[in-house]
Length: 353
Image 1 (cartoon, rainbow, N blue to C red):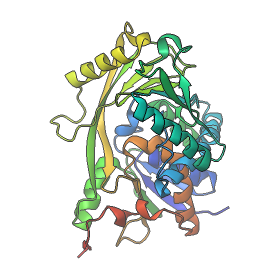
Image 2 (image 1 turned 60 degrees about the vertical axis):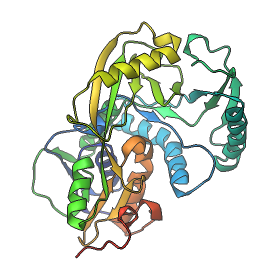
Image 3 (image 1 turned 90 degrees about the horizontal axis):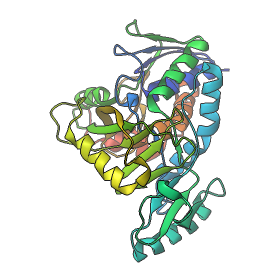
Image 4 (image 1 turned 90 degrees about the vertical axis):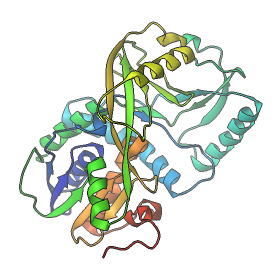
């Protein structure tokens, strides 16, 4: 196996999953994060691992498909090594169909899933009856059900990864002298630092807020309706999320937008109407300018690499991102899609002076 000294900056989902895979492939790894494990966006509570629609296929959707397929074995391996559960479960997702036009589109997408997902999962149009109080209201009486979507608990998943890294001999430190190759997975702060270094805006943080309810539906599929994710977790809680806020004053403070989110969700799903709110979360999620994860070498810094910009799809993308970053760092084998490269988030005609 390849061996190398690698310092990973950032103990969020990208940093930890890359560190874990690098260790699995024989590298010597230390993770440095002054704020600790899952201190930023990766410490959330939602954890919806859901695919993009199976149409207008592109590199991003193919990469995500491969990662969601990898996820089952990736997280099972993490759990076995760590002795901790990440809360992973591939239980699918259901969505209401709002009108006849949406029904026609949903059926067309079912054909797209047959073509692009190649038997790994299905996208079906089903009748809403039979799901009881868990079914979201659907004006047409039909729902979309896919079997590719999965869930995990973000913070629990990061803690499981941290335990697995330490079990494999890796270190997670609040401060240390960097050594060897450098992988920067530092979220919104990392996007700011990269923007300053390249003298161009490559991304920013988008605030999200979410709520946690005391409701045990751990064997039920996740719901997606009216832009809201309702995620039943393996620990007997249910998460509701999330907002996307570009204008904010306090990045890690919740406000009445969480209450509005929960009230909308209660209208959509009868099962949660009486469930009490037991937790709230707010934080900044790193969004690259390209809208895809940002991966690859740091321009102008030999031996430095970037893994950032997960935004809403970071946990679902993490297994595949860890794989391609290990290929690049350990073997100089570059399989990163063009739309994921750092350069894809640079404004036209921008270059580092």
